[in-house]
Image (cartoon, rainbow, N blue to C red):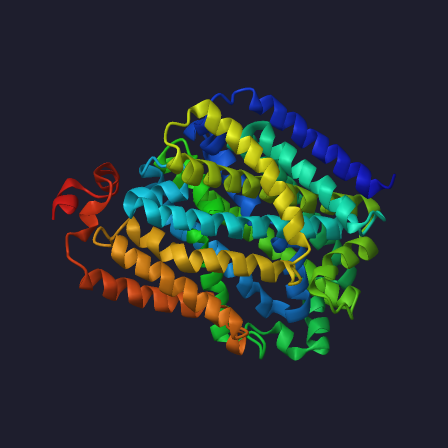
Length: 480
């Protein structure tokens, strides 16, 4: 058994032990879904960071930086914007709603049927994101063991399912936090090693300029300002329509904790993306000629790090994959159970809901394996499309719903349809000019939202849940 497999195995055992210990406190469906709304700033920041930093962030982004130079970093700028906006306003406001899931918030703010449709969209996109993590884990495993694709897939889905079923959100949050520390340590260890090999940042830039002078600029022919802006909107705005991130706000101990954790997460993300970029840039000089984006990570780590450092990095990636995958499985199961099945069967008890969530966790894990055989895009591509389609339909509806009381079911529904349709059409056109679909979808959605809201009756928002309105707006605002 090689050193890579040993380190990864020991790390997984450690995660499982922590998860089992924490799971002893799971008594209800609320404990399962949102950790009984008990998470402090550390596990909140840790679980959000580890969910954001998925296989896409490490495996595929490293390849993106390798192939595009400094300008590639625009794809990470939006993630930092999400945390900034959440810390400033949205995390606190969403936690004030006292909701357990994003569809529950949508149901109370806009209506039951809108929520059910949103739930179906969420489940489909989340399973696609889950499959994305599965594909990344297989890429990692097959770099140092000779198992076939199906064997690796079954093994990883068992691991994903076990970690999720052990203890729901509370276990996920604390195991995510451990993964977050390992991820940051892993990328810095490799970044420092690579910089020493190329002679420092100055020598690195000089070498990159010889490869391609565009690669040391902020914008390139492939990544002009519009493409950069579209990347910022993809992760900076569309993330607010992605429930795997929003669900974290609902799990916080208090609204203030939700806000504070996002400020800390933003700093942690910056500390992570800088060394990841440096690894990709140094890789151009250490191992030129890699053509496939998703092969850059495994090629660089296997060929240009010591076995021990490489093993730490592989463990960090597997930690990122597991932390994201268990969050996605948990999300798919809770959304389908709490926001679809329970809506059809309101008499479902807490115990029944918890049992059903665990059963659907297994079913969605199997479905993720099936999806794997139909996805051919890059890991980054799959992730961006799934988040963009959810975000194009739901992000503006979620964001405006907490600070503009006049937004209502009619305007929100029209906005969701137009935003989703724009993104879908843009992808079908092949993302013209290299501009990500989030840019036209957000522009169209914003225009439609404002116009349709003003064209509907001024008091149309009053159909929303009165208690929710009272939590979001002052008494004067609600009555006006």
